[in-house]
Length: 240
Image (cartoon, rainbow, N blue to C red; front, top):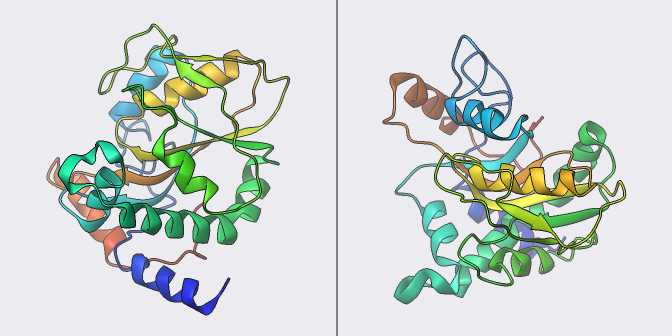
């Protein structure tokens, strides 16, 4: 990677917060806060109830609202209206590219080989999802797999559904890394993982650029946020 790209990476890293990889207060699935008695958050509990299982999530960064990263994620899409800024997509490409180059060997060591990357479709029907362009601009080399479409099942905040998405092809055991831009409750991304598995794909996990945290939710969440944000972000750091 060129020195210019390195400089860009250092710049965007100032706005990133590295998730914790463990602790009794960290959800073992999505790296958010956890119920101390179960080791998982309420959102992952709801996903399990709806889908029967929960796929592990690797967030590149945590974020709160408001924040620079939140604006990049919201307004990199043309649907962002007057605040849409294509420069935000460039920033997200830099984040994703640097992370994949630093961490893909660790991902494959933990999850096994990856045959393709599948972007979680937009629930609003935007095709292709702008995240597809972000990924393609990384030139990472693992092919993009476009096999998911919106299904008939309702998808809402905190409500995953087994029919939320459908697959247009059978997976025959292909190992697909699911990619999303924002992970909030997991209802959408986890429903997409369920659809892929139902069609014969192997989904080792979900990679998301950011996992939203609300530090004002409880003192426990505030403590987690403050602990994570106190350290400098490191693309080469520990994410497993």
